[in-house]
Image (tube, rainbow, N blue to C red; front, side, top):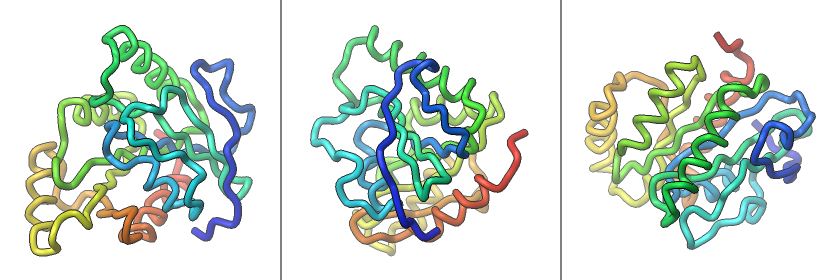
Length: 198
């Protein structure tokens, strides 16, 4: 997909704050240090549109970005790393689960996994929750440039086996640093946007 325009629309912490737009939405989720902001900037071709923080857990709301005036990206708060209280974590979880369960324009969730680290319990919980609620998930492995090409295939195989995901399941190996996987991930997003949710 060629991105000709991308802009921040609003932040939201509850359904009453969601944008009125009915454009199809793609949510981006992942642990706090997975490189989420950098990957969104890569996909949108806008280097500083989503602020990249050195402090994991900086995003504490749902952030909506309109792409080409026809598609919404929703940056979800990171999970599993930020040094916050259990009360705040529960609040974040409720905010995210409410959005995922209630938002009609949502087409799929791009779930980001650091290729070097594989899936952790929070990642598996999210994938299980999405499957239970019938929300399609696109797996994007990040930071693949941090591993030599000779090690990537084995790292991918181990990660998929750990999560019980078939080796032929759709996924993308990405790098916000080199741009690798951008085209493949956009193709998966385009297919999700065109499909009908169950």
